[in-house]
Each structure stands twice: as structure tokens, then as C-alpha cells.
Length: 383
Image (tube, rainbow, N blue to C red):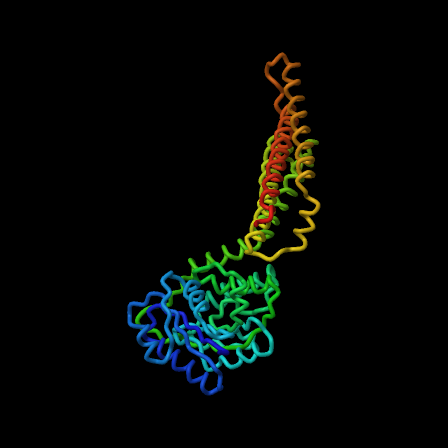
């Protein structure tokens, strides 16, 4: 069988029959050997019976969520190609021929585009303003910037793909963010991706509102974006904090006066805080990237591989050991200053210039040693 038209469904009695009949009519009109499959996610309004009566095959998916319904439907699909579309009558299943034709040309993922800049059409009242002008463009831009995605409408619910591609991506999301995860992982894997313009209409539901929750699903999408890019979640903020900390040290150690303010021991404390948190964030980036690659969540990155080729366990232990010894020496100098003062009151503005760098270097050294062991453990190949 060439094509499965997959429609996820949760209490869509108002519209699921219309969608199934339209999809079946299109398959017949285009002469495509295919089926219409409804993945029912626990409907209680008779949607499965309506879909069956309209000519669909229905599979129940017990685990709730848009992503869960689609994953269950993909597993049950008989077609080499799969087109997915919502059951709310907001998409014209008569347009699926253009998506299928691009799959026949060799593309692996064909993303529908509702937005005019991608050739699509949004009819009046079909998309809320915040979604059209802020949410969807923002996530689309981030996907292009962070993951190299070529699409202009990451959340379009009408898309087509080769079944073997999606099964190989090992998608994990169970909610609405499944749509974004599919594009992200397809882009990272180097899949052949293209777009096809589609039309978005006001949905035909009357008994209930959309299942989409703007803020909940928006946050879940942003969370997925961050989890799939340790560089932007951990590495970039970490580098920024370290640079800020080094700047603080460069100004505070010589006691520079900036705009009438003399930077001294308190500035060193703030600078040390920036250094420690920034370094910890960078270590989290390395650990996260190692784990996600080993677990198969992200593809291997040659840049990280080159970094880990240099940052071996032995070098990490050596660097961490040097930092720890240097920090302990500075702390011993501070103790000696106290001894010279007969263990009495000290000039803290002077002493803290030694204590703070000493404590910071010691902490950085211990972090480096422990993290080097942990990274080496993460990088052990699984049997």
C-alpha cells in the first residue's frame, strides 16, 4: 500500500466523518492505493463509530496526547507514505496530492505551510492572532536558527512523510510538541525535507473548543527546543557567565574604579559566583550532549567529538589537579597571613583578595576532576 492518511481523533464527532470522506474521495480521485486510518485517543462521543461508517479503519490508542495518538497510528499504518491531518475539518484533505507527489520525488518529510510567506493561505478566523504573529513564527525561526530546519511553518498539522523515516527518528513526545520534535529530529538527522502550500480554514467543531492550550503547549514546545540543543540551554549561557566573571576579576583584583565605584572584595565574590555557575553550566552542556548522543536522542556531532578527543579523562584530571593545588596554595597563604597577625583580626579587604580566588580555584578543580570521571563513565559504549 502506498499511502495511509492518518487522522488523530479525540471527541471529534462534529467533523471526523467529513474528514474521512474527503480523504477517501481524494484517494479515489487521484488513483492512490491507500487507506484512511483514524487513531482514536479515547473518544466518548461516538467518533470511532462515525469514522468507521465513513469508511476509515480505526485503531484505539489508550495513552492520551496528540503525539501518543500519532505514534500509535504510525505503528498501525500500512502505507509506505503517511499523511497526517487534524480531525477538526480545518485542513483540506483534497490537497494531499501535492504532498504525496513530493514524497514520490524522493523527499522524506513534506511539511505543509499555511503561512503566506511559504505560499499557504489562512482564511479569516482560522488561526488566533498570537499563534499567527508570535508563537508559530518564533518557534519556526528558532528551528531554522538552532537546528537548520528549512520549513516556514513548524506547527502545520497537515504534513506527509515516509514511515521508515519517522520510525528511525525515535520520537518521544506525547503532546502537541510532537509536531515540533518531528521537524527538529528530521532536520538534525539530515533528512530530505521540503514544503507544500496548504490552506487553513476555521475548524468545524461546535461541541467543544480546540484541544490546543496556548501557554501550556507553548511552554512544552520551548522545553523540547531547549532539551534538544544543549548549546543554547547550557553552553552559551555558561560561556557568557565565565566571560563576565573574568571581567570582574580583571577589574577587582587591581581595585579599578569605574564611574566613581571602587571594585574590591565584594566584586570578587560576584565574579566568582559567575565563574562557578558558568563553568557548571558548561559542564552540564558536555554531560547532556554526551548522554543524548549515547541514548540516541540526538545524532553525533563532529564538533563535540573533536572536543572530547582533546578533553580526555587524563587531561581533565591534570587540569583539575593544577587548579586544586593552586587554590589550596592561595588558601594556605591566607592562613599564613592570619598566623603572622597572631591569629587576631585581619585586614579583610586585603585577605579576601587571596581567599576568594583560592576558594574559587579549589572548587573549579574539584568540579573538573569529578566531571572528568563522570563524562568518561557516560562515554563508555553500551553493549
